[in-house]
Image 1 (cartoon, helix red, strand yellow):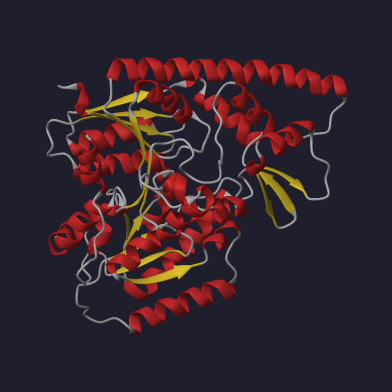
Image 2 (spheres, helix red, strand yellow):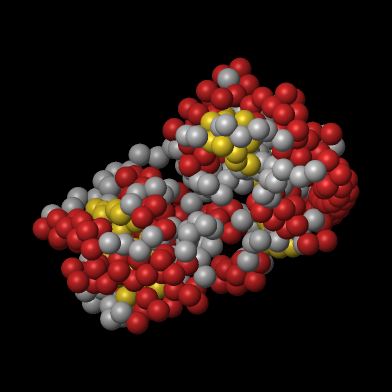
Length: 439
């Protein structure tokens, strides 16, 4: 196999892994291409292995970046960091400890990326993001040395407002609270790292880690958007395209920022064209007998949300849908725990789909989903009937009023039910073809 046909994909999450699998699926007929996916420790690699086996991809290799390279350790340290005002000696001790820990993790990560690139010799490297300051930075560092193109794949929509609104993101202090010395340094050397959100000042990440990365050569000029480091940025969302162009400037994005289809759009189109066959397959597999294929697409549960409340609300949503439609397929987010959601199948008529959402949404007649979700783009594109519920309502148990409002929407969807004419879908640049041209 010629090395120029190897595509290296760096997955820092289950969402990224799922997206890259979709790309590989769309290129499965290209025998001259080999895929290598490098997985961050938080990726459920066994699940990915099972999906690869089901796809029958014999040209797909998985590499576990591993705890030994420090990726998992660093991510957890950044996320759980809580600022405390300590005495001078304690602060100095923490500074020394963090310096040693971060420097060691960066060295392990750098050597791990170097060894993988040297071994696989990729023609191109695909990234989920280049602003995360995680394992991607190591691959970008060596890719630039080896003149290997790095491309951000159009997998998921993210925005500055979305990052700021999630309280688990970033290093946060109240506006009236004094900044620690590390944050003052970051504000001076990297002014773009700080944003305001309501009554809070938010730094994209833990300031001390930001300083260490800067000293070790891993500087991200604008961490709030994609595109500071990668050679090419692709997005399927016009609003994200506009935000990146606005943040980085037209001169810095010209010729390297592209609006394409997402990595999953090719699979969705195929499912849409073969919706009749897919509907029949789903009916046989899950014992569905109704004329409508109803899909409930649940989003990822945010870290600070109660597991109990989230599952309670999911149960209410499923029961409500079954009252009006009798049966439904539940599509879980790639990060969801399947076992904890199994109880949903105890409701008669509910089945949890094994297939990823991209493989079945083209056959759906009705989609139920949270209003802050990338699913919205697919629903609008396919012009599929839908019912939404407030995404952030999932953090607390739904009240009787919320249940009533949701059921009213379901009732309206039933009354609006009719045979629809399938639209001719407008298509953008196919991302798989885009990558083939780069190769």
